[in-house]
Image 1 (cartoon, rainbow, N blue to C red):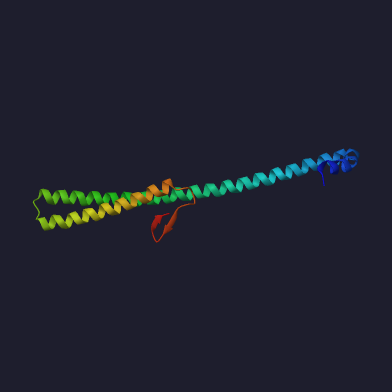
Image 2 (image 1 turned 120 degrees about the horizontal axis):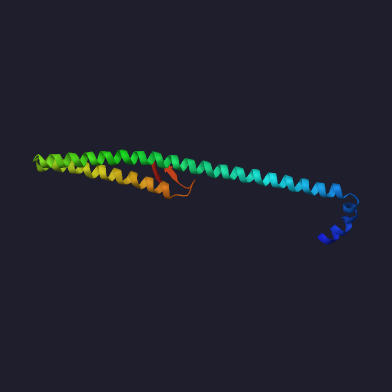
Length: 133
């Protein structure tokens, strides 16, 4: 069925009651606009919640990274103090191993922060305390 045929058939009804036809059209257009606006608002709310969740996760990961960095700096300061005090090689090796472990933990925490900040909202995955794709 062609739109022009439908319009030609219904034109007498539209011209016979223009207030109803135009009013109905305006009412339908208004209802469609309101429905579209509500849908847009709910989509925006969902995106905003995703951004806020990502921001909170980034803040939590940053706090963890700062804690790991402070521990690493403490281990390095301890190593320097022991080296300056003339500690034995075995003692320095033990402290050096702790420094390496602290650095690895700090590096992993820093990578987690970077991953969260660079991920699209809602695209990050947390598995057993680890974060990754």
